[in-house]
Length: 73
Image 1 (cartoon, rainbow, N blue to C red):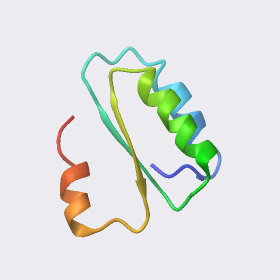
Image 2: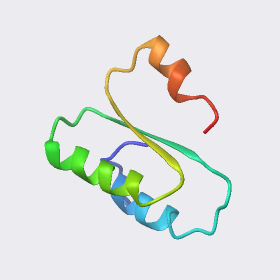
Image 3: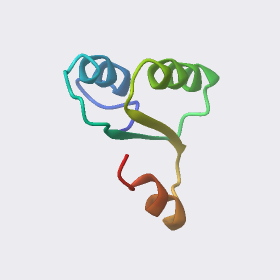
Image 4: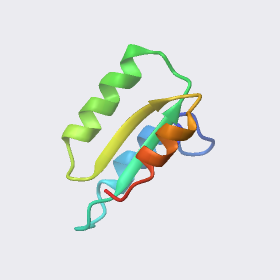
């Protein structure tokens, strides 16, 4: 997921996703070019608010990182 998406941005998506009654742990990877500390704080807020695994990854993503962030939560 990118933070800056059309129609619904990444933060709006997370707000709606976290309302869903999903018991299984889901991995959500935020992949962004943002270096804004505010975005990191928002990520920390959401990751602490849920049992799902939400990661914050800066672009570009290296091949080794892809293998790591695509593992099952």
